[in-house]
Image (cartoon, rainbow, N blue to C red; front, side):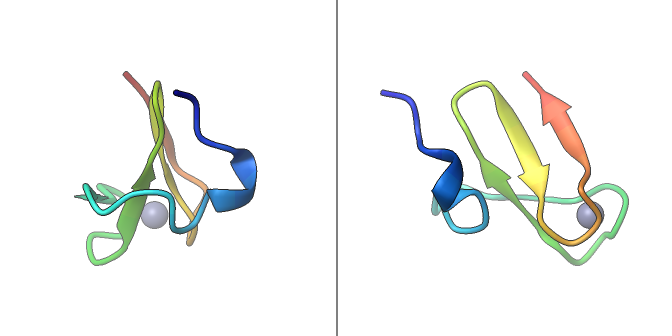
Length: 44
Ligand SMILES: [Zn+2]
């Protein structure tokens, strides 16, 4: 089930670290992960 964009910053407990920030976590979505700090998005 797709997550809502409203939960962009805190949508999952399964988080990866941002390769750009290093110490920031990425918010996981169904088809991508997103960094709330720098805006980095990685599509799966
Ligand atoms: Zn980042």
